[in-house]
Amino acid sequence: MSKPIIATTSLAGCFGCHMSFLDIDDRLLDLIELVEFNKSPINDIKNFTNVCDIGLIEGGCCNTENIHILKEFRKNCKILISFGECAIMGGLPAMRNDVPVRECLEEAYLSGPSTVNEERILPNDEELPMILNRVYPCHEVVKMDYHLPGCPPNADLIWDVLHALILDVNIELPYEVIKYD
Amino acid sequence: MNKQIIFTIDQKECTSEAGKYIVDAARENGIYIPTLCNYKGVKPAGSCRVCTVKVNKRHLTACTTPVAEGMEIELNTTELNDLRKAVVEILFTEGNHFCPACEKSGNCELQALAYRFQIMAPRFPYQFNKRDVDASHPKILHDHNRCILCKRCIRAVKNEEGKSVFTFENRAKKVHIKLDEKLGDSLTDELAEKAMEVCPVGSILVKEKGFEIPIGERTYDKVPIGEMLITDK
Ligand code: SF4
Ligand code: SF4
Ligand code: FES
Image (cartoon, rainbow over all chains, first blue to last red; front, side, top):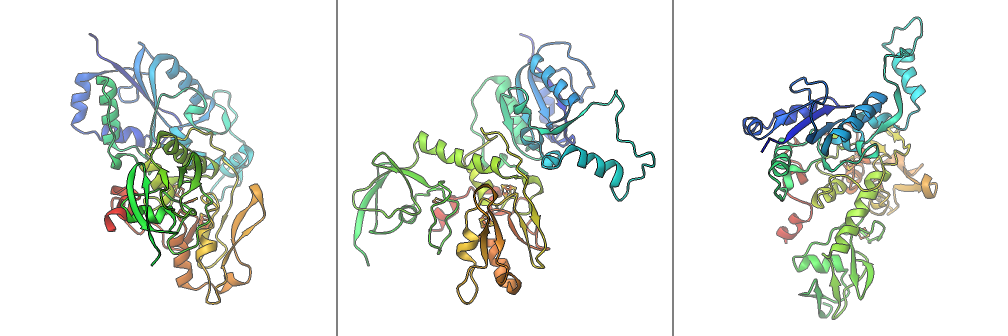
């Protein structure tokens, strides 16, 4: 039997969740025995080359590119997991959600105290993804199968859940691993 | 002493004094009923519905209902546990709770209930309502994003004359907590501290006081809310 395949990505996140993933320490060695990695910043594979069993999504959706990648993950992964507060509820990037986009852009590119922008240009190159009106939790864009909270999620939580999904067993999560900070 | 009565919680026989509120009577019998708007020593308000139990097929708030002889109380049924969970999820989506950036994280009762109920993500859509932070007072800071309108501050924080220092302003969707115009100026350090302690969430904070306890040692880092009360007894 071929090994289960995992893909990961960071959307509007800070890579902290991926760092926590690496924090499973020597269990990484067990993990690479058990699974194969496809598209992920961990191995720098840029495009899906196979249908994956598990997709881990860090970060919510703050621009059109994030939406595109998330939909691509949904198409290519059997099980999709929001890992981390940003994927689940937008996280710190979503602190802009009650401010109109124009105001955010003006503050960042025109009127901010440390901003020098003499031509007063707001980023508008068509190569750049469009910023969305607000940051969207992943499960408001596509169906997500599981949610692992935490900022970042506890490494033990990530390991326990991956391990259980790979071996297809039920688990009881201990109290300490579910945290929102 | 009032007369002792016998009642049951999930079929377990319990005894207590007649007239005690169900939450208190339950605790005396080593049973924890989750609460949120309730605060020890303060008249219950029954506003959050987290403590909902079922007696005779009716939903009741255990913090405001006295026990009675022969009462058969349902507490940990699938339906009731899910209802409590839903109430907590509503509060998380109705306010703006950015726990990673919150001074109360780890010591917050709302968050602790969510941990206890193992809420991985709320079933309701996030509202992202626009709420303000009011830092105008010299001693305290008010973050309306986190307020769950439980009125614990209004009910528990009173000055020497017994007057509430906090009050509600506006109504319905616009309602928010506010320091009383006149009494706010005379807020003592003790009352400011008390307000922060009474607030179950990170809505009332004493300035320059955040993040005092390291992660791992905060109230609910290792022990679920409710467990301590039972072992304390
Ligand atoms: S008040 Fe509690 S639930 Fe809200 S952000 Fe702070 S820690 Fe989280
Ligand atoms: S400020 Fe705190 S104590 Fe007062 S109503 Fe809001 S959540 Fe309750
Ligand atoms: S604790 Fe009983 S209604 Fe809030």
